[in-house]
Length: 82
Image (cartoon, rainbow, N blue to C red; front, side):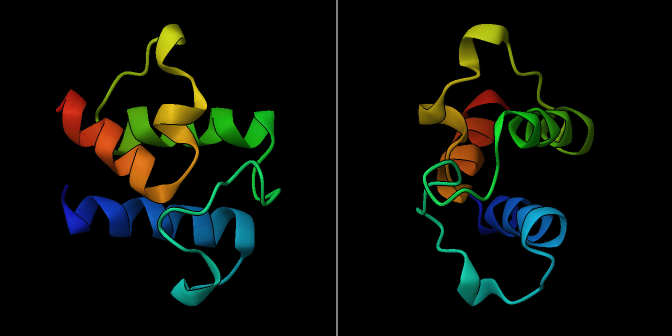
């Protein structure tokens, strides 16, 4: 998995949901849902980010926590799709 992808995803989440650039506040494997970082609306924004900024289409059946619930899961999902 690309560390560049991880960085892009983490930076997006830090800037848009945690309003910081301090990477220590978000572990790569921490659940975005369990920690309350994103809700269903936030998840839709992350999906739009994946599609618009990372160039990967997310099908309805792929909108599951296994693909989208942590920085590492999102980065791995995008890497598989590219």
